[in-house]
Image (cartoon, rainbow, N blue to C red; front, top):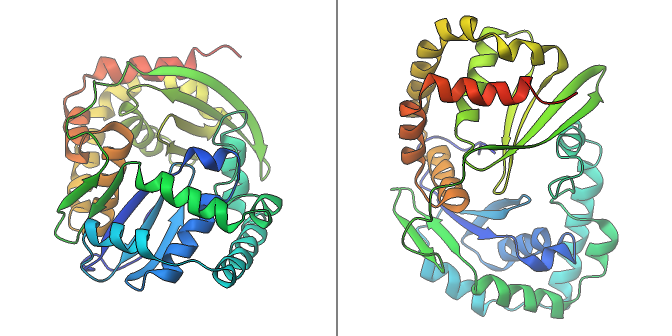
Length: 305
């Protein structure tokens, strides 16, 4: 998600993993995000997705300061009731938004098909005790923070990188119709970095068709109009374009560093998803061979109908 704040904003970001308790009480993570913003004066905004809650502060708030505030904040019944009402209103509003409905279809039959906003009945049933248990769980998990100078802090994360992800694997193919068009969503796991370049390559070669790349912690989906599928096999066409597309992708990524807020978000997501920096991922994309790119594209084209 891109944050709509000026590129030179002096803003700190805090990333909190969604707790396993969320699987039982849909919307607990979203509700807790609202409670944090309500009770910690330095926090000004945030959002929750399927993998994490992201919180923003215009003040220089260190990770240790944030953790102290989170531990010590007092949540009462009035706080809970007020924020429940806000969360339920958001759920009702966003259930009708085109973007929300589209991505629900993209992730059909996966753990990401449920809205990260939560479910109204579940939110209504959340008690203060559940909130306190959730707070305790979060304080035991890995939390990331990054300030406006790109200084990274972490709590509960291993300092060393994890092993390299497994080779990219095609998990499923989902067909769906939306807004009068037919789409295919191909879901991948493993090393999914090639998908960034493939999305740009297809988009620049066939700009009249829609294609997007949705990345989550455990999987990524390449989503495109059905007519594009047969075109993935045309290696000769793409071979002529790949070098220039790769150069433009890396140039655009370099520009993103000037927009420090979005660069910081990419940095945090990369560390949370892969335990490696965004710059490491860009170097991986720069160095991967054309054959590797085409092999992943063949996984899309050769998938059984």
